[in-house]
Image 1 (cartoon, one colour):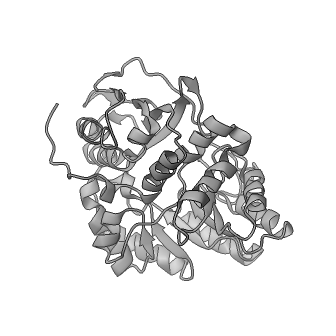
Image 2 (cartoon, rainbow, N blue to C red):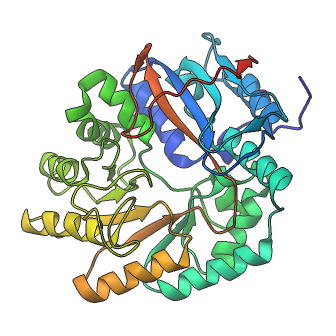
Length: 368
């Protein structure tokens, strides 16, 4: 395996919600063996960055104790892939690898983008970051894009967005320090919800993951439930709000672009209806909260909000509907062939967020 100049500790370059997820899983003694699946929506292209991604897994997967059999299967460096192909399967106990997603995705995303399209344009980051702030002058803007580029660039990208563009926060400690902030921010990832789906069932997973966060995280951490994992955005929002009256700060909507959110019309103008996080879908969640007496529960949106035309639709949506959201988690401030990683199996049986099932790839080989 080629050698890489990796940092002694992965945690500064890790999204805060993965660090918190591991702490919660440890506290609840929940550590099932999982399979993560990595893919890229764009293509066709050539696999790039895979050797460094495997080196990251090899270096850090044992950091919380003895390695309990991390197995990695991947397409070799330089192989061709098609959009949506499985590029990598990672098998290990969840506590061993849940913190590593940010770094291994970042190196794959950066190398694949550079080898198939273009390099990172920091001026484009400035331009888009300022345009987003201009469109949303009164919203909390959080940089969620650490996984979209190489870990070594995270402090500079975060600095540009916070110091030069007026954004409020970023997801990693390295990014926060680069931007002159104390620490990264983040609450609950899909991986944590899926772990509680394994232990408590799909119907209770979102509530149980949020209750676990509430039990084990410091009081100043905002209690924000991730409610789209099983495409039950309204049902899981209300169930969590009713379980945590007065303690739930907000919910996050991150509906995948392959799915129509619960409450969203299937047909209509782009970004207002159809797949992903939409104006009308968000308005449906806001109405459900208000009608149930949870007017103080906020909404954070993520997934695709680096697109200025999508943001404009939501700005117009607030003119029509009134208050829809308070904060945005945004990764797409530069163009990237960004890789995505999802849990698709737990203890050998298929279990995943809705729409992201296990996809075998006979061209992958064992690399770790």
